[in-house]
Structures are given as C-alpha cells and as structure tokens.
Length: 320
Image (cartoon, rainbow, N blue to C red):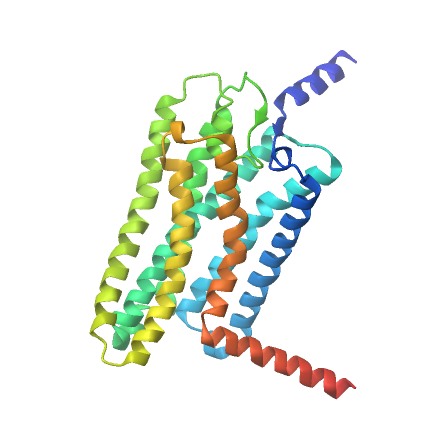
C-alpha cells in the first residue's frame, strides 16, 4: 500500500502542467474550434499536395520531391503538438508526463531542424535550376536529391539528440507549470532550479550554427538567382523564375523569423504570451500556409489539381 502511494505521488510530481493557449483566451471554446479547423486544413492541404505530386508524372522532379518532404514534415510537426492540446481542452486536463514531454520535445526538435536544412536544399535546387539549367539534370540527379534529404533528416535528429536529453535531465524543483502549449526547450528550461546559463549559451551557439549554415546557403543561392533573373532577356522567363523563388522566400522568412525569435533572442525579449504567439505562427500557421503558397502560386500544381477534379467529375458522371 505504501509503495503504491509513493508511486502515485512520484508520478504526480513527475508530471508537468501545460498552461496552454486556452488559459490566455477569453473565448477558449471558439479558439479550440478555430485551431481544429486550421489543423484539418493543414492535414488535408499537405496530404492533397503530396498526392498530386505522387500521381502527376509532370511533377516528378527534384523541386517537387523536396516539397513532398516539406509537406510530410509539416504534417508530422503539427500532429506532434495540436492533437494533444485539443484533447486536453476537450477532456479538461493539462497534464503531460516527463517521458511524453521528452518524446514530444525530441520529435519536434528533429522536425524543425530537418526543415531548416531542407529549406537550404530547396534554395540550392532553385539556384542550380535557374543559374545552371543545362547541368540541372546532372547536378540534381536522384542520388543527390536523396543525399540532401537524408542529410536534412539526419542533422535534424542530431539537434533533437543533443538538446532533449540534457534539457530533460535538469532538476525541476520549481513550479511544474510549463507556460506553453507544448514542451518547447526554452519553456521547460525556465522550470529548472539549477544554473542553466552555460547550457543556454551552448544551446545558443548550437542554434547559431544550425541557422548560420542554411541561411548562408539560402542567401548565397538567392543572390545568384536574382542576378541571373536580372540578366534574362525574356520577360516571361523572369516572371516564372521570380514566382517560383518568391514562394520559397515567403516560407523561409516565416519559418526562420520565428525560429530566430524563439531560440536566439535574449530572455529579456521573451514573455510567455509572446512565446506562445510566435510558436503558434510557425507550429500551426506555417503548415497550413505552405501548401497554399506552393499550390496557388504554382501553375503546375494548379493544373494537376484541375486535372484531378476533372477526372473525379467524369467518374461521377459515368457512375450516374
């Protein structure tokens, strides 16, 4: 009996309380419905985009291979955080155990890190396609694409393996309330009762390196791209190249801007409310915006979507 009581008390002490978005809202039910709708839109939009790319032979090229990987990362990242948050609101609980918190943190860090490097690979792909079009099939062959994508996933997992174990092994003897809607490293670190200044400095340096390499690749690629576009004689070619690149740049600015705020700005710039708003931006909104950006601004994707809808309508007419 005593062992059972000790185990129950120990389990309760090891749990965290996720304060979440809904405690900050005057209309939590409405906010819950909105987030659920956005979640469904993100899942359906990314799934449709992956399906279109898989089914249309004209979309079987490196750029759309990277977009497929980006959509998969978006689906996984929003699924790691949002369902737990919505279920907690519906069930009236906000607990998360230490192992669940660690798993959520690791998966999320892996996905975010992988997406950072994937965006760099996509920028390099656009650089080769626009600046070296004749050598594009050779420089971006299937083997190179697989190498770049697998490297992105590997480097993202390194980020998760480095930060998660250290964060979760700190002693948490303060409040167990995480001022966030999921287990993000900065929010969890605030609960530690030990000196985390050295670890925060190392984490800052790690994030600088994680962002510096992709940002250097992206900025260099687009500098060459803009120079090449400026030299193009055909207005139609300039328009097509700029449309393709501007879509990618929108995604990069949204994603990297939020990442820099969360992991690189000093703590004096942070408040729990600001942190949650920024996290909503790149955790919930970015996954739903990516398929819209890459589909509405892309004639090949819209053509494939119209073709699929036309096939569906023909099948319906045939069945009648």
